[in-house]
Image 1: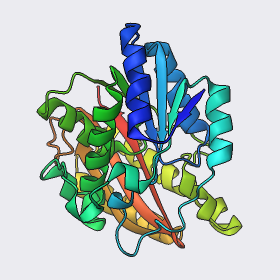
Image 2: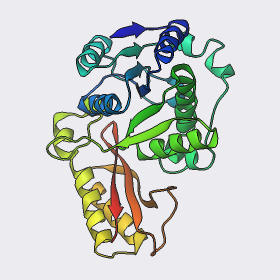
Image 3: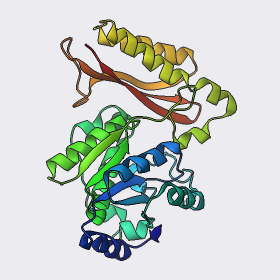
Length: 283
C-alpha cells in the first residue's frame, strides 16, 4: 500500500492511476478503524480498480466543547488494517496540508437547511465542516465512486446532495451499518463507554427496532412513536437529543402516505454520544 501525506504526492499518484485508465474508489475516514470501515473498503474494491482511503481527524467538524483533542487516533494499527484489507493508497495529511491558509480563511461548502436539523441542530457547524472536507478530498482524489456507512444517515444524504448540486461525477454508495452481536452499531466512539454503559448501549438500537415495528404495523401517529421511543431511552439511562421519523429521500417530515421512512436517533450515554437509525419500507 502506498502511503502519502502531501497533496502533491497524492496528486502524482492519482495522475498515474488515471493514465492507466483505472477506476478510482475512495473511502474517507477519521481513523481508529473498525470492521465497519473495513467493510467499506471491501465494497470499494468490488466497484473500482484502485482503492484510496484517507485518515484525517478534521477539526472543522468539531465544536469548541467536543472531543477533537481526545478523539481516538491509532495510525499504525490503521495502516496495518488497510494494508490487510487491500487498500492501494492511504492519504494521511496534516491540518497544515489540508488548510494551508488556516481554517479561519478556508473556503467552505455547505448544504443549506438540511445541515441545521437533527444532528446539525445539536452540533452547529458540524456538517459544514463535513461537506467542506469531503468536497476538498473529492477534488484531490477525483474518485469515480465513494463509499460511506449508513450509520451517519444524515451525513450520507448531505454528501449525495452536495455531489448532485455541484455536478460532481461521483457515484455515492451507502453501506448498511455493521453491528455487534447485541445490535450496537460499530463506532470509534464506542471505546468511550464504561463497561456498565456498554451493557446498556444496545438498547438504542432495540428502541429503534420497536419504533420500526410500530410503523410497519401501520402506526402513522409519528409524534407519539417518537415520544414513546425517547421516553424508553430515558428510562434505559440515555439522554436523547432526538428521535425523529423522517422521509428517507430528504429527511423531511413524512405524511401518512409516505412509505420509505427512517427512524433516526442521537442520545448520550454518560459522556458518549451515540447515533443510530433504521430504515422502514412500508408495503
